[in-house]
Length: 102
Image (cartoon, rainbow, N blue to C red; front, top):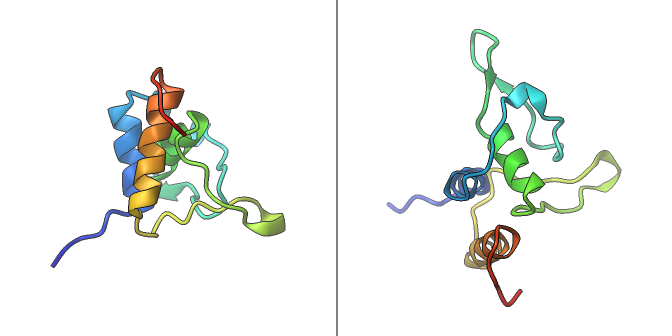
């Protein structure tokens, strides 16, 4: 059975591949209302997925979608489509020092 790559997974992949600075999760104010700060059973803040999504968003690699009056959505559990994958890779090349046609 094939496993799908989720948007939260790909945000982490592009953040690490691009060498982005991923700060401690408490330092971020969530951009997307569906990617809150997660905590473990002891109350410690978890970096994944918030810190990686925020680092990728700050670099312009992920953009989310309109979520109405409550703020933008990222949809971290959604599978990444081939189009989205290509867009994120193109943004990574363009925004981090390369040329891309879009």
